[in-house]
Length: 501
Image (cartoon, rainbow, N blue to C red; front, side):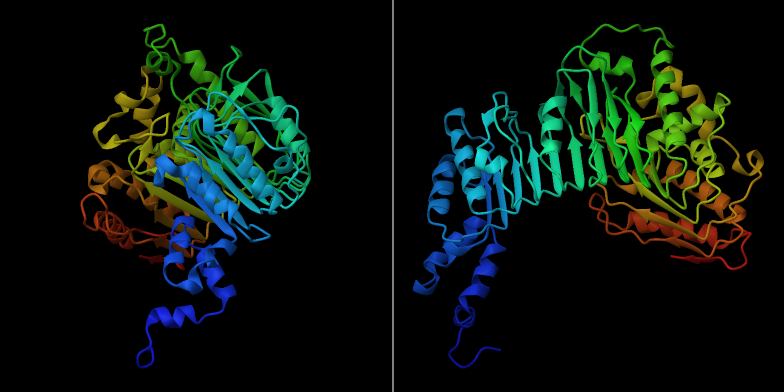
């Protein structure tokens, strides 16, 4: 409570300057600046903030002037975080970005985020002071194109680097890596690669995490293929819509955690999207799909000794097709397995085949979701689409059989080490009502299968859902509670198993 005649504003104003500056540094820069009108006490406090966040969408017309005004009056000797959205900046004013980056570097910035919603066609130079900024710890650049051919990269303290929607080539990536001696985490997504052939070498023993995400464009007329040579990487993720990119893992022998949640599009659909000619014959894409099946089988061989493995919906479909062709899946020795599955689209046969090959698993997490993204990252509604709408004829015959498989009569094997199963609902923008029937039946079959074959199972946890944004009901909870009710009555091979909802 405030004292008699004392307002909340008085109490806040009585706080020491250092504490007020910390509070302002946690606010948007525009909001921090507007506090100067409160009183004389607040008139210059904002000039000492250590975090800056500028979003052009909030200013548009006077964005450049506002940024220049704020930075020219800053008296803080050190910057912790600098975030800049330079969308809508015209070509004439983009030279200012170089000045702003120079400002951040001279103030010993630690964390920098630079992004734009505009495709940058002409590169702009990076100041040498920024390229040699030894205080930089994390750097993220989205939709950028920089000219640093004549500069030296020396980010001696950089530990995390993210590049997205970036126009770059192998040489520039190698140049960046050579200047980051303590880099630990690197994420590359939606890159435009120039000047192939492409072989990305990550040779630093410090680099432990590599994430490759999204659609990569290769604009040099070469095969859409990227070789990855990363002998010291321990955590590898390949996710998103890769279109038809062939990601060849040459050496990832140190990986202990692998996440494979990417998807590939049929070459006929790709050509159709770009208005290119394609052979309409039903099985004309067979060789294309056979290559990716072999690639996926190779991934399983590569990661058969990892400790943690995450598999996505598209890979369950590929595994289904491999199994129907008589391919034997390698023995997987992972102890922690996560399945990220679209509740309607995952392939039951493919999942069961993977589980049969994963007898060492102790913990199984099943993350179900309703959203799906097309190859360009746009949300699509699969509730109105059948398998025929999303797969070519060559894929369909196996996939339809895979969902109709009777698990109880097909496989006689157990899960001798499986102790924990958890079904989790990942938040999405699609209502579960649209997926209830087919999704429920498949998930129930899979859950019953696990309960009947996991001889040492201790916990089977079903997480409760949150309020649906679409139908404003607990449709997720309805879905999962009915699943729990069915499983409570299901026979279990483990006498110690407890079902928790």
